Every structure is written in C-alpha cells, then in structure tokens.
Image 1: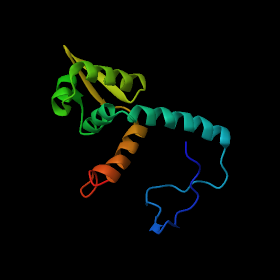
Image 2: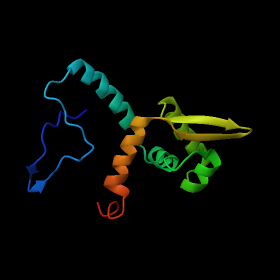
Image 3: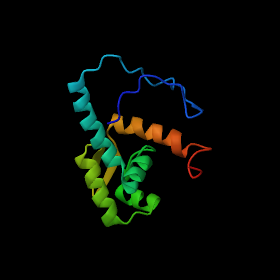
Amino acid sequence: MCGAITSFGSHNNVTMERPEAMPAIPSTIDLSAMQRSAENACRLMKALANPDRLMVLCELTQGERSVGELEQALGIRQPTLSQQLTVLREEQLVATRREGKHIFYSVRSAAALAVLRVLYAQFCAPGKGASR
C-alpha cells in the first residue's frame, strides 16, 4: 500500500485539494494495524484489477442482476463470466441469491462500493474517461 499522505498542495504545477469526504490521516500511525489494513486493501485492489471483474461490479452497483442479465449487459461470455464471479464470491465482494434455476448477484462489500464510487468519479463521470 502506498505511504501515508499527510498533506495536499502544489506538486509539479498541479494544485491538489483534499476532497471533502476524505478523512485526514493521523500523524501517529499504528504500523501493525496499518500492515493488516494494507493486506486487505491489496486483496481488494487485486480483485478490482481485472477489467471483466471491474465491469461486473460496476453493473452490480445499479442493482441485483442474474448471470444472464450480466452476460447480456456486459457482453462477457458465460464461461469467463462464471470464472470472474467465482473470484468475486471468494473475495466476498458479491452476495448471491438463488431463485429456481437462476442465481442473482449483488455487491456485498462496502469497501468495494466505496472504491467503485471513486473510480467512477475519476474515470467515468461526464467529462472523464476515454480522454485519459
């Protein structure tokens, strides 16, 4: 995990301001707690680092979806989709619900949802994205 960010300001002629919702990082850090948190954060980032998994989670931010709905919406073929959903289940990022022959998925992880919101704001919101 990256080192602690203790201040915001000007760097390379770019001015950065602390976002309103971003809490200040304390000046005294419990390194053993930080190590455990870093391991958890890295597991989350690793799960999000696959474009198919990221797209699945982004679609699930819009609400619960069946496997068929995800396949149709994202254009990811069923074998690949099932493989990626397995990873998301193993990492406890999604919850499942069975209804007859259909399995429905939803976002389970509050941490993943928070990261997805930041990614959306930085890369997908109007005026962002492909220009980067």
